[in-house]
Image 1 (tube, rainbow, N blue to C red):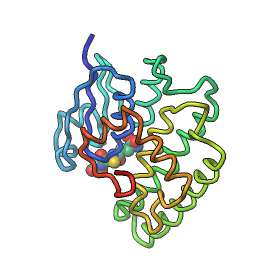
Image 2: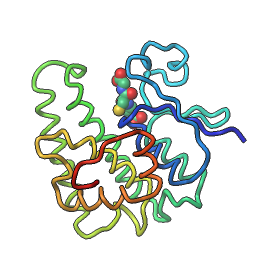
Image 3: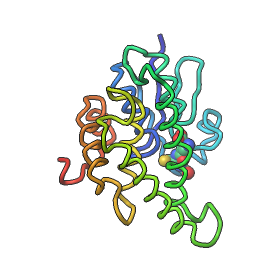
Length: 205
Ligand SMILES: N[C@@H](CCC(=O)N[C@@H](CS)C(=O)NCC(=O)O)C(=O)O
C-alpha cells in the first residue's frame, strides 16, 4: 500500500488533515509547499490547480479541500472515529466552518484579493459573529458534535488558532478556549503541532 502524502504548510489549511492523519496513526509523508512555490510550481498545480494547500495523495487519488480530505479520511479509516454515527450535525458544522467561517477568515487575511472597500473590516465583524455562534453551541458540549472528538474538532482547532489574529481573539471566549485546550491534548494534535513547529500561546504551554 502506498504511503499517504500530504502537501502542507505550517499553520495553513493543512493543519486539520495533518492532525487527522496523526490521530488515525497511519504512516504518512509530509511535503512542504512554500507559499510562493505553490503558485509557481506547475508540478504542484497539476495536483492542486489553485496552487493552495492542502492536497492529499493516496495511491491514484489526488484530493484537494481540507474538509473533503477530512471526510475522505473519516470514511477510509472508520476505526479512527473521525465522524460520529449521527452524521447530520457533523455535516452542518464542518460545512459551516469550511464554507462560511473559513472563507470569512480568508477575506480577513487577504482583503486585497476580494476587491476594494472595507473587505477586511467587514470580514472581521463577520468572523467575530461566527465564533460567537460556535461559542454558544459549545456552552453545553464537550465536543462540537457527538460524544467524542471528530474531524470537526480538528477543523475547529485550526480555525480557532487562525482566529487569534482577530480584534477579540477567538480563544478569548471561554468555551472555545476550553475546546481548544481539550483538542490540543489529543496525541495526534500534539504530533501535528510538533511537526509543524507551531508555537503555543503561553496559557496553553
Ligand atoms: N478551501 C481550501 C482553502 C485552501 C487555502 O486557501 N490554503 C491557503 C493556506 S491557508 C493557501 O495555500 N494559500 C496560498 C495562496 O493563496 O497563495 C481548503 O480548505 O483546502
